[in-house]
Image 1 (cartoon, rainbow, N blue to C red):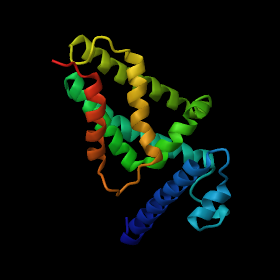
Image 2: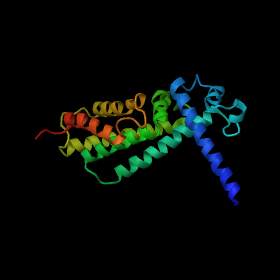
Image 3: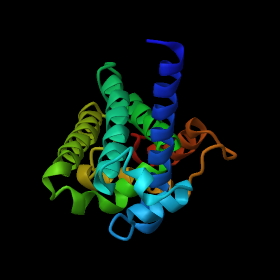
Image 4: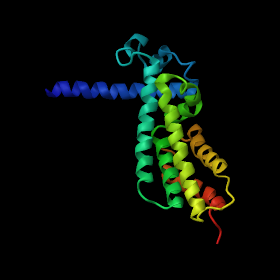
Length: 203
């Protein structure tokens, strides 16, 4: 492929990514239903008609934003779950990976938080429900393993603990800003020190 053709393809891919990032911010701030293609185009500094050169609908944009985020999330999570770590170390790694994803995809996480339940009823977004079930299984299984190994307290309500940890971590997307005072890893360490001191077995 000639160099100028490669450059055109690269520029087009970069522009597409920029548009998705812009759309994600608009969806996160205004909600999916309230967001129009025109609003996304305005935020991107282009005409609405020009946006259709890259995407056929706002639904397609949202689909790509969420599927890209979940694909990357599960690459990280699957790596953690396959590593053969102990239950406490698995929780630590999952929390750290979660904050890294918030750092990379803050707007997508915010959209997922607000919209997943409604969107998952649509055939195109059924994978959101599948991902949620897989997510729940991973966390509940790790907590159950920790109780069985006497790493976590025997009196834990596993499902309540899972909901607490899940919500405590992912709600950070509402305030976290990339490039802030603390790195994702530093925030994860602070959260883990608070969470695990409450559920680790005292000896």
